[in-house]
Structure formats: structure tokens, C-alpha cells
Length: 340
Picture: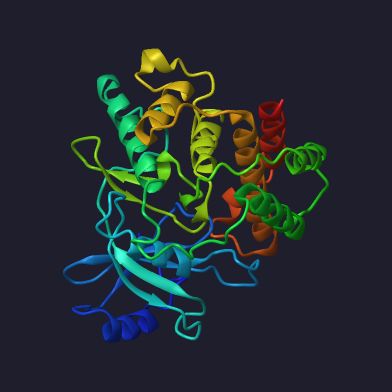
């Protein structure tokens, strides 16, 4: 379905014709249903297509919707072991369409919303999870200096910084007091682990529905949605994967809770963690409960922000965003369970 409701196509066409070699209109725009935070569009021209990702309109939380950072990190990863689309242009001039945006290659691959992989034959499912594991280890093995990302995030204790940041973001979008969230914030505040010397690139929202895979095999073609990426501690990404799988199966939870993973050809939590440790030469992970509790807390804060944007009329998909508000207490309680 073609839509121009959220995008000034005439302005986009005029601007990109001057900034991308070979760019030609006329354009059609189709808004992707995925991507709650930064509205994303397929731009279809006479002989090829691109993807445009923009900041949403309206008043935004400071440091949120950082399309500039998304562009920078993906451009830096070109040619690395981390598959990303080609980056074509970043526009930081709000006057063009009302907010910053960037244009990238459209990768045509398989997209899985459901980690149960119901459309994949049972014997072929494990290989997809192993590839997901390989790419995660590759992200955490990037030489930050070599790709120009050594200054991509501040130094210091990553979890201390993140707990402070997301507590502040949560307070800025708080609508009601949620007792489990208050208790979780307090517990995390008092249980930050000492630094262990690991400082890597962190994706920040690593899960199977932010990846595209080859049509005929398990190869990952692209990791998408780098808005929350930074430099920090790698176990945050690993715990985020395990967190997602604790959620109920289906379109909203997108998890694996209650699924007989062995019978369905799916990897176990511990199997994924062990394979990751093997790839990175780690003996194992102590106190994984902290990292899991942190992942639940962070996602609860993100969902609260999405919910608040829906109330304020700035969400990319208002109906779905409002439904996310109900998940905040659930994620907070899961975080407390992981902590204990």
C-alpha cells in the first residue's frame, strides 16, 4: 500500500536527487508496520528501491530516536563480519521533511517476527539460532578503534550509566507509579557488578525480528535497528535475547515461554549462552541474573516511553503503542524474578 501521509515525497525526491548518485523519481512510499520508534519507509523509484528511516515528529526525549547514530554505526561496520545494509545519505537538516533522516540499501531477506520460526522446517531452525549467535559474537568482537567507533560511547561502568540513563528516561515518561518497577530500580541500583574489562560495541536491541536472513538458508543478511547502540558491556545484548524468549509466544510477546524447544528444534537459553561463550573464548558468565534483570528493566523503560508517545499522539503505530503500556508492570516483575 502506498502512503505519503507521514512523508513529504516531493521534498524527499528533490533533496535526494541532489545527494545520492543515480537517484531518480518519481517515488512511491510505503511505511513499514515494524519500527515503533523511528518511522521507516520503502521508497520505490522507477528501477530500484531504498529504505528511509526518520525521527518521528513532535517533542522528543533528549538522546532518543538517534538516527544519526544508527547511520554512523552501520556505515562503520561496512565490510566487517557484522552484516549491515549500505548507507547512502544522512540528512540532519530538519527543514527538509521536519526531522533528521537517512537512506540505506533495501535488503530483501526473510524476516521472522516469531522466534518459534513456524514457517521454517523443524530440522532447519537450529541453524538460524546458531547464525544469530555467531552474529552477536561478531558484534562484540568488532575492533572499535579499527572501525572508528572508539568514541561511540562514554567510558566508565556501563551498567551504572545505563541504569541512571533509563531511570531518567522512565521518569520523564512515567504516567503512573508501578511498584515492581520501583523495587527493580532500587535492586539494580544496589547490585551493579564491578567492571571486568570488557568494552565492546553493543547493539542495544538484539533480537531475531531485527534481523534479515537469506531466502534459502540460515545466513544473516543484515542486522537492523541500531538506534540504541553504544559501546558498553556485551552481556547486555546476550541477556536481551534471553529476556525476549521469556515472553509469551505470539505476535505481541514474541517469546518462547512454555514452548517445548527440543521438540521444535529450537535452542535452549543455556545452549545459546554456552555457544556464545565458546565463540568468544569465555569460561562462563557469573551472576547472569543481574544482566537478565537489567534487560527487563531497560525494556520496561523503553515500553513506557512508547506508551507515553502514544498518549501524546507521537507514536508510529498509536494503537499498538498504547497496548505496550500494559507490558511495563509485567516486564518489571520478570526483572524482579530474574534478580532473585
